[in-house]
Length: 442
Image: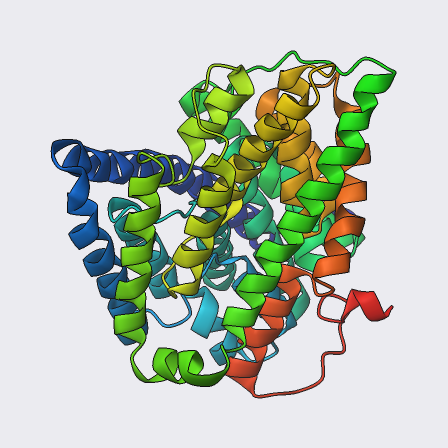
């Protein structure tokens, strides 16, 4: 009987469909990365001719993106990760389609590129997670996986494969699925996740040639007084990361008073105002706050950046403004850039610690403070910078920053936003799953 099961044509048809879906995830992630670079380049080409052009491009682009999102792609707003978490909690296929359909995936790709072409401080990694989860879910339907458990596994696998392919970080993809998307480790689900990550990872390396996202960083943190940087980066990174998350959650649940009424009644005008604020921040920073922040973070990691100390607070504000406007776009890459900028500032105050190591500590601390997933944060920075010598300091800083972040923001960002999506789609109801419980309350 067991042999017949493994020789079943239906079983191999499902496996082939699943592998094809994971391969497609890799191809789309690669295309998305190249298209995002092109969109960012188009914006910078426009402002290179006239830097004040941003005062027109950013407001118009953000307003148009929000309009298209509301008219044609509701469910595509924001980073995409909360939608994936919410989808794992939904029982109704209609509700899941509201956030994980192929139409939403197409809109997510298109509108994230529009945001980057408008100078928004957004990333493509969160959107890649939503797009990838939608693709694997669609493949699951096509090959006949009707069981809710199987479909949930495919959604988680798609999200993990999306992170792995977007960053070329396979281990972080698996940990992200366990720590952030599902908050659990299930044998059947984990096997599906690992398989998707392996297929997507192999395809990504085969096509792109591999290489770490931010290049190689060989910084080390000697034992002794230099370890003060771990504590300092963790405290400031966690607090600023928690503040960032708290601002985003406050906007998601509605601003109070006249500001809240204005946003509800005139969302396009609010998006345009966010575009103006984004352009003003860009002008103040010499253009450094536009886009994903990838170039700035890579230069900071390499030690070749010539950025002012106020880059990190301006980039933080630009990312807040971009997100609260309501357009599609992620926060992963901008958060890594903010964290790297914070680390560079702290390095000036701690000259006895290697600057390259402090930049990595600032990056992991702020990122952990934002997403409140300390293990994933540490591993993703290690894989992004190809630095294993910093694993202990990065882990220590990440977990300390998680604790500091919880002082400022008791609700994990993605879990709270997922709860918001569930309320919008299914109506208000108490969460019963571990992923949506307020972890601060146990």
